[in-house]
Amino acid sequence: MASLYGEGTPGIALRIYDGVRTDPEGLMFDSHPNTDKITPVHFEALEYISFPQHSWTLQILSTPEFEQRYSHDSAHIIAIAGSGVSLLLAVLTWQLATGRARAFARAQAMTRELRESEERMRHMAQHDPLTHLPNRALFSDRLQAALARARRDSAGAGLMFVDLDHFKPVNDAYGHAVGDHLLVAATKRMRDCLRESDTLARVGGDEFVVLLPHIDTRDDARLVAERIRTSLALPFLIDNHALAISASIGIGIFPEHGSDDVTLIKSADDAMYRAKDAGRDRLVFAD
Ligand SMILES: Nc1nc2c(ncn2[C@@H]2O[C@H](COP(=O)(O)OP(=O)(O)OP(=O)(O)O)[C@@H](O)[C@H]2O)c(=O)[nH]1
Image (cartoon, rainbow, N blue to C red; front, side, top):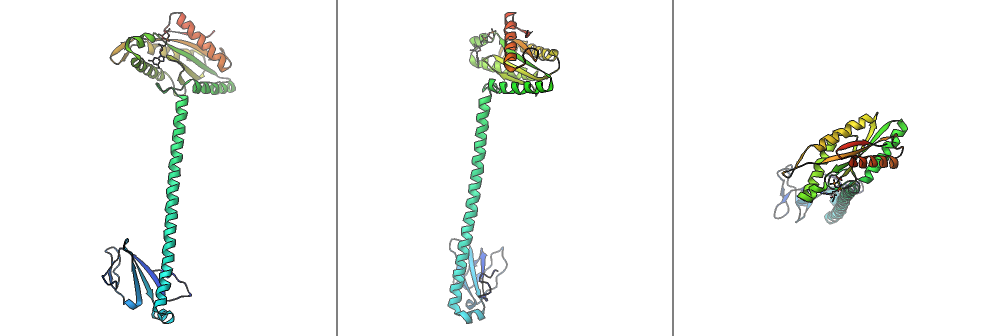
């Protein structure tokens, strides 16, 4: 029970019950099974206000002293006015609180959606849709960062161009979809030859690049390149077709074959073309 009217108007109080059933004349009521038993009280000492759409019942209590001072009707009006204002405030507060909570939840959901779509867009802008490998733009960023680190640490880095051999005949003989599946399978084989910290990127139709950001000697790069060459030279079984391809690999070492990304890329790319010219399925180091 709470007295709403402070010290100036002692003797009047308001109770709000939820789930109370009034009797047909509104004089007596039973308690809800979950509330305490409410003792019936004489009409002169209280008023009831039931809300048809709700299970609430207001009980307005007044002491005989209060009624002597203000009369029953005044007590009634003061209580009704007071409870009306209280209810209005409670409803407003509830609406503001839930409205704010809803607006807050919606804003959070929108922020999340926005962030996810930004991440999707950024991923699409930086990755190849077929193999999901980094594309040329992302590779270029990673290469520049790796060379800056290697320069600072006076360390080595390796760059490889890996171009598949005899890929076009696969497309021509079995169709583009089989060619696509072969590119995905070749990607997996190459990825399995690399460390997590290495970057494999797709920079053309059947052309890939590999960044080895930490190598001590050119033999480190040779070993990785040889592993890739061997794994790509094994037959692929794609959509029930046994397919044979291979790879020509050009290798450039930082800083030996280029002290900046542009020079290093050109050196490794030239080496790859020399591997093609020399008969394919081989590694060639940059000059
Ligand atoms: N299936 C498929 N084919 C592609 C895709 N992108 C490019 N290609 C094809 O890949 C082939 C690449 O050409 P080449 O590198 O000259 O073909 P190649 O037979 O490997 O030639 P060499 O490298 O000289 O051995 C072309 O036929 C392109 O149409 C792709 O996303 N999917």
